[in-house]
Image 1: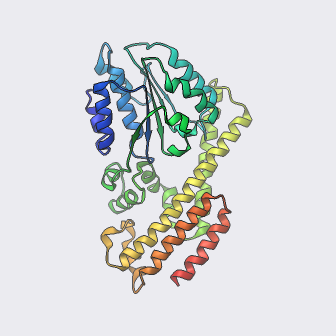
Image 2 (image 1 turned 45 degrees about the vertical axis):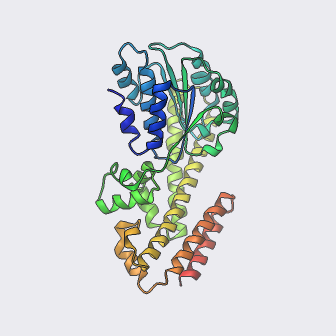
Image 3 (image 1 turned 45 degrees about the horizontal axis):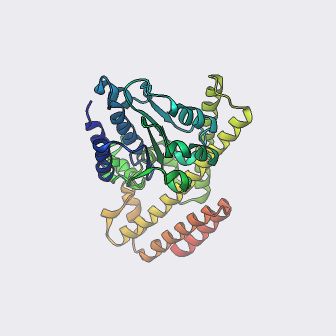
Length: 351
């Protein structure tokens, strides 16, 4: 395996490719901050970049790359930390990153530490990590990944070289999906460049969310269902870790699981409102004869029927109302009241 692994991973992120390729030639920095939307390829690119760093000085560079590219990786000098629940555990950050960074490489000349969803580190962990980010040993390289970079402490982010990622174009997302052509095309466009989100839209839960996007009660029900599934999955994962020896109390497990469930519920509810706005945007496009701009490619017949003799200004106003509700929910207003109010306002605009 050669550096083409990084080239393939960065196919749709040309800015990241140029910066990281130059870094490998000049010598990589001690810390990087990969920031950009979910599903933009940060994880795959971080793994390919780490593989190239670990190949430096290795007795068998190709074998070092191969092992680093596996997920999970058996390479002893690649430490990959991802949160199991809603947040990273403080002790895991201390033990697996801060303290482990003082140990020399087990093989080769480098060690790489990747922290996925870095914004989910508690402030205590981020503050403890500052010295490691600023003055790590010469053989240590850290890569922080974040889809919500504003939530990372500025003191931590400023100690890293930022690498910005853009949303993937629809054709790049579509190429990674399986399913009926029209539904895949719709999911790719509705995902805003997020492959994971597009895959979710092709699941039964995602289909229910799309189907209920215009009914606020169904929207809430779909978000609650996905949140409950996330809570249960997190609880099971944490309980398995506890049985394997990871120290967590029953209260810690319950609290982490609830946080993960609430977080996922909020994400899905926002996605549902985004789908609602996309529908009215498509309705306006269809009413003006611009069907090539439609995202819901698999529901064109329904859009044509609803757009017949429709004033395009009405669905455009509906999009504005949906976006206003999304902003209101960011302020922690009552979800049920906000969605019910939105339904009345939309009915008044579209009637």
